[in-house]
Image 1 (cartoon, rainbow, N blue to C red):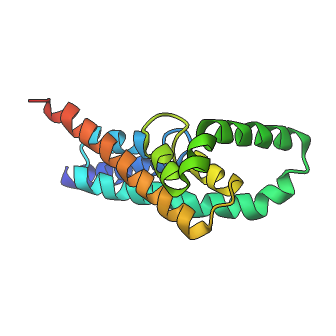
Image 2: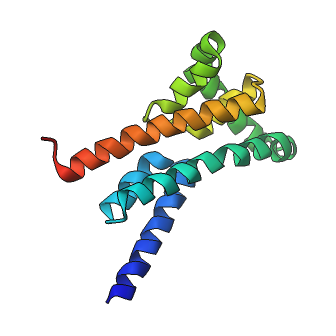
Length: 160
């Protein structure tokens, strides 16, 4: 019975990490999922945060190398232009005005469409230095994850 529980916890932690890698959830979904499945709250935070941070280098690789080849296809180009316009519209003013802090604040807001995927695209479109963009996205992910983690802890334990 104990082995089954450990296997279930491992699977739940893996699913939480996959949610954190996903553009459909990021750590905003991975953290609550793992915590509601009974996985250790601290472990869930660390794993989901790390998985969400791993998205940035993957996105930079994609944008630098793979995007160049896919942009030749009409459907992809239309989709990429649409996503790029949304990223600029949603974050453009803040990033142009505040730079590093603008990315941090944009990624930090735990709402759909404001995570590391959009932050990476915005960093790329505004030609931020990679180290600076990585740091800004990582700080934003940390605070977003922390907000979600605390809110989930409060919902699990009740607010007193």
